[in-house]
Image (tube, rainbow, N blue to C red; front, top):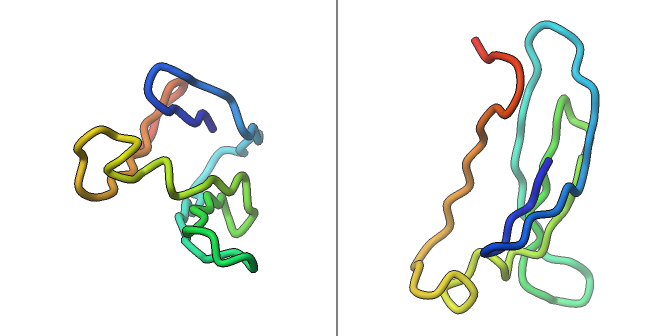
Length: 79
């Protein structure tokens, strides 16, 4: 999993995936300190990474007024 904020990119998680179907899920939650929501990325119920949701805000994205999260394949194929 690669997180990108503007021109910065960082690999935040990596997990081998066996052949066959799998479930990808995205969740949000508020942490115990009341900070803005955290966005969690899961594969087959395993949490891969949790990122600060503020990076998907209008202030950081310079004018974007909502949240968009997309997944795409960088290697292999998806059926």
